[in-house]
Image 1 (cartoon, rainbow, N blue to C red):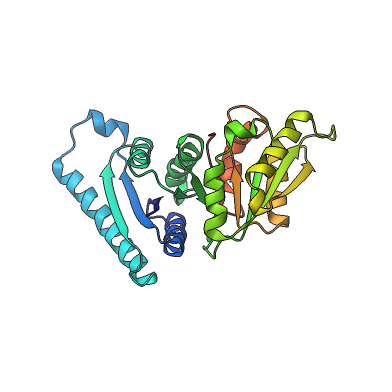
Image 2: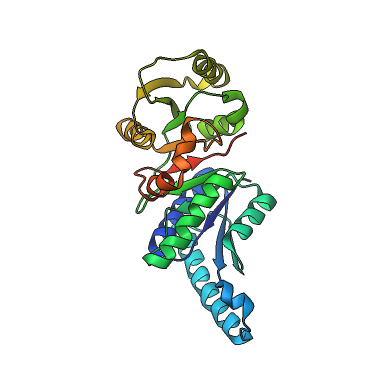
Length: 275
């Protein structure tokens, strides 16, 4: 059985992402793991904290988690398996460990939490997950509902395709949702398609031939804007991004751009680290 992990801080936007994950889990018969990490300030680790405070924090979080779990089970007619995990610690350590143990089909996260503090904490956690987890991460825009995935767009610079693309995962995704695939290559100028890009295009066609992917070349001085505009114009239900360490798409994760790119998507974005 596939597993979907959905972290939450119980803010409305993160609960919306949990509901998206639950509906996806229902649709593909996957297990859903809900994760809430109670983050203590660094000073709490240096100063004595009474057991009563820890107990109160845990009780409050577990009560919210139980209520959320009940709502999910009611909404899905008790037709999905839900596991809840509430722990003290640091989110990045906990999510990395959970992914290593469960090898999830996807981690589904909101773009941010509610309020200034939650926004900074949960938003930075989403960026960390998208860049560093060795499993797919789906980032859900505010108020986005799961209604199936029929049109998928994949952004690529067509460089080092064989070494960076998880073709088995993409094939499984396309088969699971019976989806069509558009591959979009972003070019910053009109210099034309070079040999390396052509080799990458041929690799895509050979690997995904049975799914009949459509290849598109677009020119845009701004990668972020070009990718999002293409996805919007082509009514994509999911946009796949490969956060490469080198190459054209690395700019998406420069500090100046990653925040706006993840904070303001208009469609769910699937981040898959290099193969």
